Image (cartoon, rainbow, N blue to C red; front, side, top):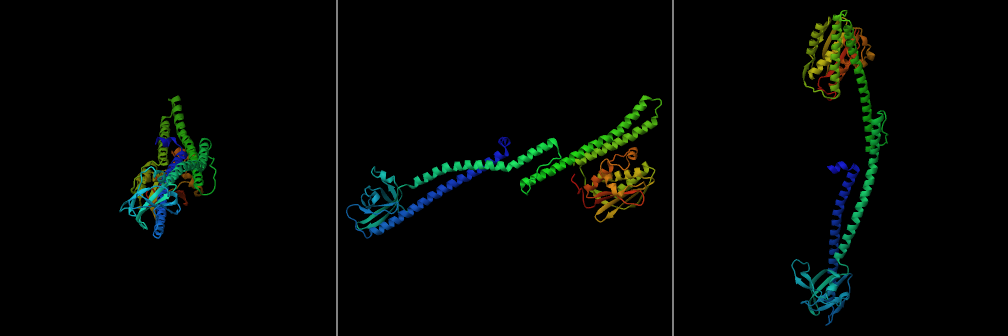
Length: 466
């Protein structure tokens, strides 16, 4: 783990591939040596058996004298024919015609020829035996009677050939591994170079200007897709940064206004307590205090919403019950008529607190602008539950009303400040309805204004994840 932290990705990948190649080369070397060894033994055995068969056929018709008969060479194979006791040489290939008896044959069931070859220990035989390998023996019949025929591979032994191959493998494979490691190091470096370039570019952008972007290389390979993804991330970061700056600026402005009013009112009353209109002072303090409380509550809700930290419940919620409760509340607070004749049983699945806040924000907004009456309604429309909240106020321009659902936007700032509005109520409504796959908008009516809320009946927090 420590080595992984200290080494770069390039070094780790190079080590991994070099180790993998080393394992492959090791198994390849073992398999190659084993295959060559078996092949050499098989070929040598075939040559020896063939040469022994030819010699046996020759001796079946050739008369052997008392001396040592000379036999022709069969490639790299030499032949020696002895008496059954293995004490005298009757015939031998020209290359070993002066050699003594080189081996004796012992019967063996396991041997393919019926005999095992046991090399002679005599000092005269050793120099010749050092040049021989792959010895085979079998019985034969000659003009001098039954005897034994021995066949050997003459010259470079199989063991020597395999040793040369092992030495070659031992030298060439490490060189091949070293060359592969160098090529892998260079290849990975070339492959990661665009990634490092993107990293340096993003580092500069993050420190200097989020409006800059990573250059696109074109194509649709991994690097091109990474560059596009990074640029998309930078787009979101820039938008988030801009939004955060605007949000903080607007929030500061909204908080400063009631605080300034509170401080100015308290300062005037403190400067001349005897002449201060204390009922008016109390009214201002209560009004601005309620505005501050509402603003802080809305800001806290928006912060939790933006961080996706809201814990949502999923239960049956009767929107008609919430509308009747709001109608009772409005009649208590305002001197307004509230028409609930259009409220029909309307049930959805979701968080009751969110739906209550959603409807209350719209109802409070309508109550601030209403002259005499509010009209509430709820019903189903296909797979959506619809809520209408209308007032008989001066109305809004429906064509441009979409901006009223943005944060810190008011239809009439001076009137809203007097009535305690914060410019956040309808933006919170938008966030809530989107969670449930719905929408919020102003709709055209003959008099006043009407807000339409739509929520999917079959979706619980389906618009956005909490």
